[in-house]
Image (cartoon, rainbow, N blue to C red; front, side, top):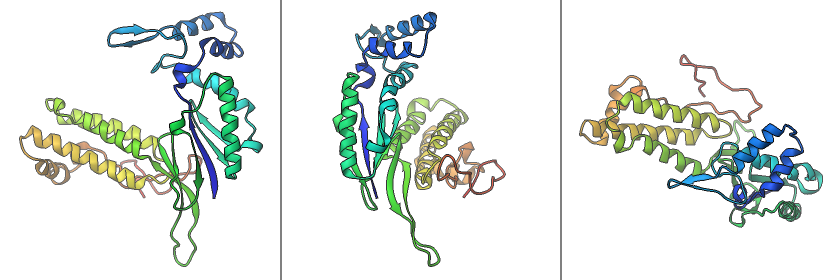
Length: 289
């Protein structure tokens, strides 16, 4: 059993003071040409509805360097954080989790985090900041697209089950995956060859599965794989002016390779990023359970 604190910074990219950000950059970079270029990037603004909008504070939302700027600025929090007193801080840009031994330590950690962010002109986003008790049957928490929850495995052959922190794609990550697959199989793409649609779907599925391949994602991999097959069946049925069932018969039975659509079912997921893969590669190079 443990306690975790989940925090997100409110309007982080827009709220970072540009002058303080550049001071943080200048502490490590002395090349004036590079510093001048970074100032130009910060002042570039964002084009919305055909109009360029510039803000007094913050980094350009959606800019390729904005996450880097955010990490440079918030590195001050990492440097002064006391692990022994306030727990282990895990931060990725403006998203953070603090792992603590007790609720009292978690509450103290949240107070400390608020103080450090206030000194930087920032504050936590209250709607996404909470203390979570990690216990079997508890709600768990989402972080970086994964849902983390303490679970207990079932015993096998007389052995007792093991309690461990499991993780799998969050509900939001699943919704986003289904939304993307719907976009790739929308009615507006009916004129494209089926091969082109499948190629785009495969590109997304490979990238999505590569990110979520660590943890306990097998069940959700199966759901996304089945959903991708259903969406491909829909577009094939529409191309032939037939229904979804006709499309399913083409993908599942009439085609030897599901029309080229890759399957995520049976994909091995590693328990941790630093652990070796289990299983042996099949003929196609994919590792199976």
